[in-house]
Each structure stands twice: as C-alpha cells, then as structure tokens.
Image 1 (cartoon, rainbow, N blue to C red):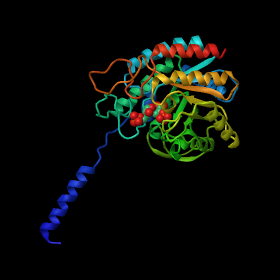
Image 2: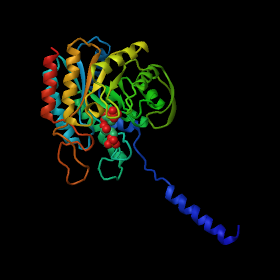
Image 3: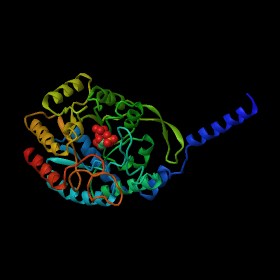
Image 4: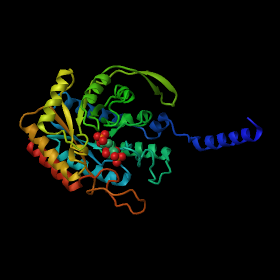
Length: 357
Ligand SMILES: O=C[C@H](O)[C@H](O)COP(=O)(O)O
Ligand SMILES: C=C(OP(=O)(O)O)C(=O)O
C-alpha cells in the first residue's frame, strides 16, 4: 500500500475506534452501599419473617393470597413513599386474607429502547447517573421496608443484585429473561422467593424449566462485596413459581390455561402453586382490564383452585401513564406501563379479601 493510502486507512481506523470506544465511570461497591444504607438487626429479622410468610403461601402452609402490588416502575421516590404509606395502612386492613408485597421496580427490561429505570437514569434525562441511581434505589427499598412492607422487584442485571438483595422478600425474573441461564443461576442464589414469568410469546414451558434450573446449586460468575470477581457456589432455591402474564396479546389467566399449567407443573415435579399477573398481556396492555382479571382469579380460587396462591397488580397513586418528558411530569402517574389508581387498588384488595374470607 502506498504512503497516502496507508495514512488514509490509519485515519479511518482512528475515527472508527473513537466512535466505538466506551466511557466508564466508577460506581460504589455493593459493600460500600450496604454499609451506608445498612439493614440493622431489627429490619433483618422483619425481612426474614416476611420471606418466610411468602414461602408459607407458596408451599401451601398459609392459605392467604400473596399480592405483589405497586407501580410498574419507580421514577419518583417521593410518590413511591406516599404509595408505601397508603399500602402499609391497607395491608393491615386486609392482612387476614392477603399478604401485600410492594413492587419497587428500579430496573425495566425494554422491548427495544427506552428509559431503563431509576437505577440507570434517576434524573430521567439520559445522563445515566448510575451511582446516584443505585444509591437512590437502595435507599428507597430500605425506606419501604422500614415502613413494615415486604419489598418486591424484578432483578434484571445480575451485577445489581448484591446492591439490593438483602432488602427483598420476593423477586421476579421477567418474561424477557426467564430463559436466560444467568438469571436462573442468580435465582438459585436468592433467599427470597422467585417468580418466573412466562415468555412474551406466551410460552410457559420456559418458566417451568427455569424453576427446575434454579432449584439446583450452580457454580456461577459473581462478585464479592468489594466488586471482585468470584466463583460462587449457590445453594439452589426451592421457593420458585410460575407467573402467568399472557403473551402476544393473548391472556392466559383463564381456568383452562391455569389448569393446563398446573398439570404441566405436576408432570415436571414442580410446585403447582402459581401467580397470575393481572397486567401485561393478561390485561391486553389496558390497565382498566386488570380488575376483570383479578376478580376472575379470585373467583377461580373461591371455586376451589387452591393452587392459585398469588396475584400481581400494577397500580400507582393515579390512573394511566404519561410520556417521560421532564418538567411536565404529573405526580404519581406511571412513566412505563399504565397502572390502576390508588382508589381502584384499595377497592380491589378489599373486595378480594372479603371474597376470600
Ligand atoms: O412492564 C413494563 C413493560 O411492559 C416492559 O418493561 C416492556 O416495556 P416496553 O415494551 O415499553 O419497552
Ligand atoms: C416487565 C414486567 O413484566 P413482564 O416481564 O411480564 O413483561 C413487569 O412486571 O414490570
């Protein structure tokens, strides 16, 4: 190659390297955050008891229904805490028949591209201040737990789990990650119960496979509290279950789907007790249909299906959703999937508790 052509090639390479180079920003380690936002002995005892209460429902030793309820995503910790205050009061009122666990979802899996949650972009402007995001996420979960509520989240990025998992009483592995070996390995390490969603296609088999995989101990890549890579031998998690969320616009909460799933779980030798997600494809992405789904599931339970032990409801202070445009955001309204209002939530939980008594 002659000298000018060589120089041109070098310049092209430099440009393409410059445009693909990533930028890194240091983050606190899990140990640092667990130290600055610490779980004391009293809170640890509460969380241990709440995990046990969830396990008791999933193993059929407690005949209440578990209900994972709260915003689709958290973008504003103040409105999440107002929600938590209200839910703490309501939980007391329905505690004979229901065990509410608050959704504190700080990571969002996206179908393509979109805002990925408080942990990633707490300023809602694409600046991606993850150090602030994970700190706020842990502080918020801590504050919700300190109000006496069990905390639920979806764990999406396995490296984020050690920042949060001591605060969790229930964990979701989402429809987009249930088939992932890394998420099954992560679930096998958690002390909290894990619900595996069926795939967005509607395939329930992957969730049953995930239960089998997570029940086993695994050797996995992990990080210690100081962020160093380690080989971790996990113990396996016996407290997992399927979450029916519908797929490709087709609901799967109806009795025929529920019975077929229970049969498949029995055949696979897995826990037949399951959760129905009243939102997502079960509500055909229309938040107003969540109440119809929830009351149908409660009726199935009343008519004798004791394996229907849990529900999920997407709810916020106010109904609906809004686009994520900073400075014009309405307080207490979802910026991801549309939610039912607080009033509807209160009505639904009280109705379910009455019908199940
Ligand atoms: O639960 C929330 C959404 O359904 C999920 O994060 C996918 O969202 P998207 O399809 O808007 O990206
Ligand atoms: C993303 C969620 O659900 P799914 O994985 O079922 O889409 C969710 O519950 O927020």
